[in-house]
Image 1 (tube, rainbow, N blue to C red):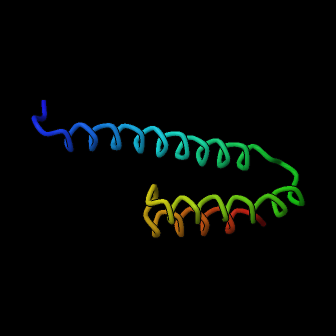
Image 2: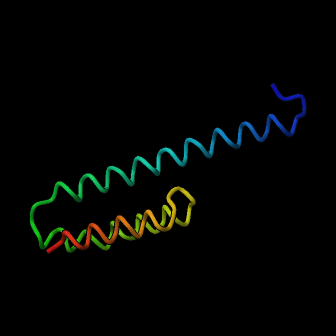
Length: 81
């Protein structure tokens, strides 16, 4: 266990950020799952922009790497047709 007060604060911050990251990561995975479950092509095209913004936000937050987001977006848009 840490001996300094600042270490306890850092532990609290890390735990708080871990929970936030986990919740947003699960939100992204739920959004992906819901998108993949859609069967109507017109609805998929409408929801694609929302999914892209969710993935871009995950990159800005540091939850996903930019190349992972690009790979997912490429695969999803390729399967749109």
